[in-house]
Image 1 (cartoon, rainbow, N blue to C red):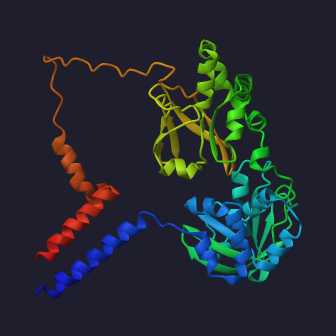
Image 2: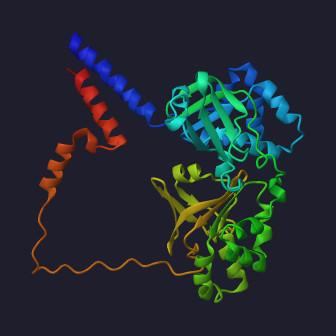
Image 3: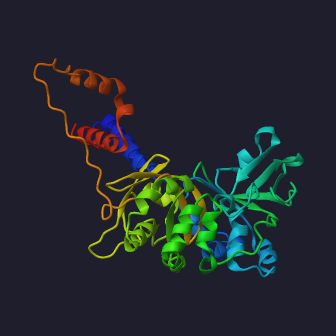
Length: 389
């Protein structure tokens, strides 16, 4: 029979183990959260209809300013196209965490919060920001930055808070924003080359039009499209090499910068690995590897490694990112050959054996020196040891 102390230790360690597993990913589902609140059903429906629910669920830190059915009715009665409604609702999704306590303790009494509308690249200037102000009597006001600073909506209640993952707060009215309510083209109406030309990728857009690749890109938008756009200075520096390619090779190179699925930045950060491109054709792979390192996302071919430096537009099903190099496939260019290892000079002094130092460092660091997987393994091993006592 186990001793009480051993049983207690086992239970405690088992609880720690479960905590470690659950804390590695605290996922949320905005649809399920709102399903529990009948007064928010219309808002919930339009989040799904506009695909904003999917984007909210992808985000690790988010605040949703929910609207009840009456407030949504006032928005729907305006007869706005669905993609315009998407812009309006995306203004109600803040890309930061605001719980009820934080709302009432805002530094200096007021702050500007970036919304998902701002993150799409559609909003001009700071029009996608939301002004949050702590008012007298415990009131908290909200207003779109392009609404002349007017606070036309107010905090009603907290629906759900999962610090610092997701917060759902009900507000009284739809945020008034002329920018968000401006006519918005649907995906099939978007002019990709016109969009990227205005965002520092005109040289790339010109190549797309000259080669005819632009039509392939645009026919893929409705089904989902991710574009990696080299900036003007990058393309201009690459032009001498580009001009040496045949017409078909130029087309393949340009199509290599498109992926026929929508991939948000969060998708790219979490789903590393090989991806096919618009240039992929049977044996001609034309693929590259996505590799993230913290907040940095790299696109690796065997010829070059490019880094995502910014977002031109993120309006599902289309997203366009700026990259700092032209992507070069091995099907068209020689792979970079790693330098041969230097021959070891036997007469040279042998390097010192620092294995003891490394061991000492590991022992000194203890649990802090372990990554998540090794820490779980240690906990498991310890649990088994205790059970065998």
